[in-house]
Image 1 (cartoon, rainbow, N blue to C red):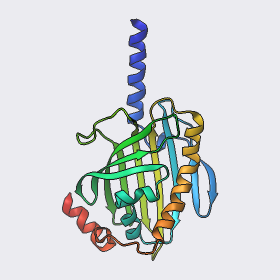
Image 2 (cartoon, rainbow, N blue to C red):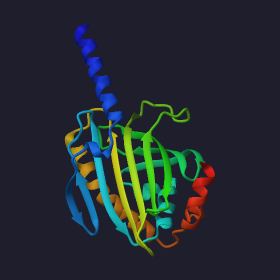
Image 3 (tube, one colour):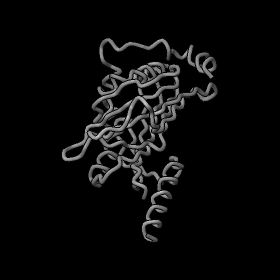
Image 4 (tube, rainbow, N blue to C red):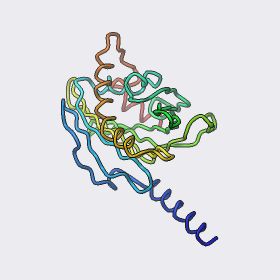
Length: 228
């Protein structure tokens, strides 16, 4: 009984530490750099959290980038391994809940994430900061055909660098849950940002890509102030 209590306390301790994690809790090193894409690596956390960090510059406006990432169903076109994605709930264009189901190789079950997403705009920096974290939602009960993953911390920074130049950075600290082999963890950490940025560029350059008026730079600040 004493051993069981200690084990439970250990699990609670790891869960608490994971929920308080930020990108500053990791020692980041450049893993690869090519085609204006920088991918960072960091040791896997004892809680099971997989750290991911990538940076790039797009030859597109900040409004185009926001329009791209706000089109939830089409994220399957550019987010690696994403099998299904849809909007669960939306308070406004800058506060929403999204469902994401990732394909996992056999014999592992798919991973499902339910994310609370909130954006804000810093006028002085000309930067949009988007915070992401996993939540429970009554519309998305857990099922037996997938494993519920947990994103403890997520951050996207999108900064206007002038005409058709936008800095983009993403940081994700996620627990894929279950007994995920190290080779899958390493694959996600090393290749995921690079592959995503490449596919984002393809999607932005796709004929017929449309700007969402909700994310026109002239309207962003007014819209965020209006909904707060």
